[in-house]
Amino acid sequence: MRSFRVLVIFLLMVSLFFMGCTKEGSEKLSANMSSAKPVEVPVSVPISYVQVSEKIQESPTMQESKMAPTVKYSKELPACPTDTATGCRKIPKSEQKPVEGCVGRGTVALTSPMKYEDIGIIIPMGATIGGHVTPIDHMYFQPIIFHSAPDSYGVVADADGIISSIGLEGQPTDGSVNRYNKYRIVMYHSCDFYSIYNLITSLSPRIMGITGVISAGSNWGGAIPVKRGELLGKIGGQTLDLSVNYDTVTLDGFLNLKSYDREPWKIHTVDPFDYWEPEVREKLLEKNIRKVAPLGGKIDYDVEGRLVGNWFVEGTNGYQGNNPHAYWDTHLAFVYNEVDPTFIIVSVGDFAGEPKQFAVRGNVPNPATVRVSSGVIKYELVDFDYTSNGKMWDHMSLAPHIGVVSNDFVRGVILVEMIESRTLKVEVFPDKKAGEVLGFTANAKVYVR
Image 1 (cartoon, rainbow, N blue to C red):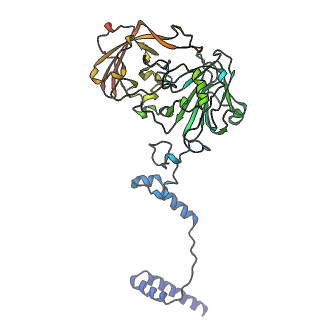
Image 2 (image 1 turned 180 degrees about the vertical axis):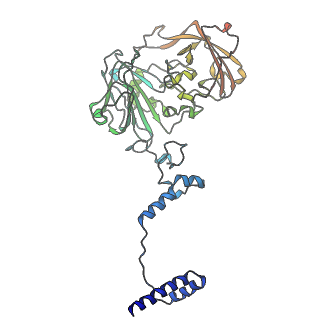
Image 3 (image 1 turned 180 degrees about the horizontal axis):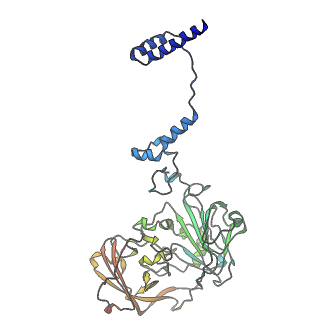
């Protein structure tokens, strides 16, 4: 009897199931359920399903296939490393933090990175020297005794900040002047205002205790808080390089910003003299060999449709170049001297296989006046040097009235023709004079901004 009852109940349940699977059965089932007393049934969704569901909705592949990613999930994506990156979260500039721990935005007042009595001279930005074919984006603090032992002079933080990276170039083996360690420090004073120090020969014990030994050719990254005036390291036997950068400022004299992706801080370089405290500024001006505005020098000279400024061989990635060992050999600049900006400087990345800088015989024509309609232009290239009160300057000591002088011995000719506003045809003729150069040959190259 008991088995019979169980069988009846089972058959009834099967019947009700098939009734619910048809329209008629569904209506009957709904009617029966509407008259029944409600029963609370707890519902539990497995957490693993929720997690998988969210991951599916956040999938960059799915978002890209829809061509319109759901904003709801964009905050879960990783932050974009560059402005042009895709499949990542775009962070407004107002929220970006280049280094953990930086506070706020905007500039701060700076102090000197070295003791005043340890500074021999300050060489302004904008010089072109050897492989620095385009104007240099940093100042040189030359110690009072240039040929000193390493670690002879202290280098301090020019304001409170966070050190975000320290790199070590290592000791060169090519017999160059800079024969000691070269540490490079990036230090943020706010989230968009920072100083870059280079050519430091040793790090302070405190900083070295945090970073540990940094191998030559490598870079340490992190966040080290430092206080204004704190010892960061020492220099000796070479200059301290200093640049100050403010990401809110973008220099107008770089026409193609993408050309400078290799050194992204360059386009945001500012004049330290505008940020040093008044009493510091006045003292450092006494050491500065440039006496005309802008006092810290100038590095951006490009003008639309004119010859003046920086050029790069077409197809060589702009400033990056295509030779990792000599990125500068595809660079070319028509600029002005860093001390006396009335003197035209032609800086060539490849002059008979070497980077060279020259003045122009006669100092004409001004590259700021050369345009497409100017046609083919010949510049005779000559050597130049510096004088003080009419006598040759030793490039070391602080001296009055430092100026530039050139000679008439022609080292070669550079032939240029602006084809378009940002396209330049160029050929270099070492050991030739203007009368010996009749026109372009098959060796001519095309340069762009």
